[in-house]
Image 1 (cartoon, rainbow, N blue to C red):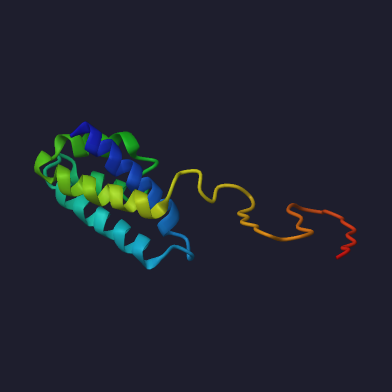
Image 2 (image 1 turned 90 degrees about the vertical axis):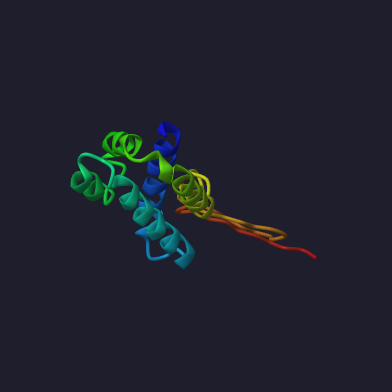
Length: 126
């Protein structure tokens, strides 16, 4: 169950970071809410269920606590939790996606500049 616990907490952390943004898709928000609900259900087997459930609001700050609580909880929820966590991570995308200052996708363009405070003089001759 430890592997599933780590996966779930990683997905919850990614979902909390992306899901809180106004630009998050409905699918991401729904997947995050679904994973949180499944996690709360799994945590019912934990000794410290109130603390663990409250930690879901800031999973990054309570990582060790959540992993321990999920590991101690009923392992019967493992497969369902793992599927939900993988789906949320798939929707959120790789951890490096969108972390830069600029997100640029340029194809077949001329005279493109990316950055701050740039100056450019261009003369196009056809």
